[in-house]
Length: 136
Image (cartoon, rainbow, N blue to C red; front, side, top):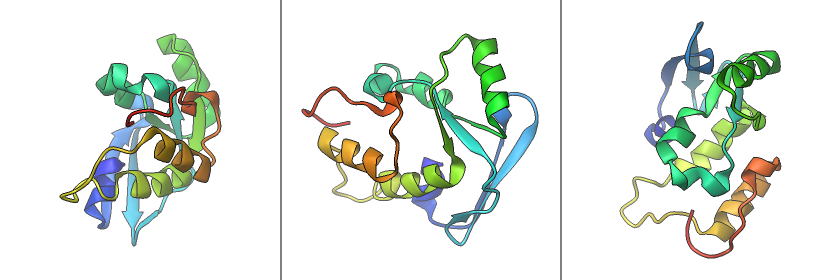
């Protein structure tokens, strides 16, 4: 959704629930998510996100309900993390990624990241950042 936030245009993201199984299309029109009855699961603690950012991003997946997430974490032996409505994560993504193409863009400071997590009510323990120093 980060790339979609950067493009700032109507588009359709085609993926599958839990990265395997039934296909799903996430439609973005006029800056809004059309199919809002979806959820994003965040199993990796953000304080560890940069240990292996490719893995972290590859586990941030879309699901149609919490039971589907419960089945997925059991199948993959990954602890259940935070579950967020796609509409909240879309709004977060627009702010988080929205200026990444700006010439003078810099990574968020830890303080800025924490403030943004709070702003979007990302309160589950996976969003806890231990440090105030550096950039996220």
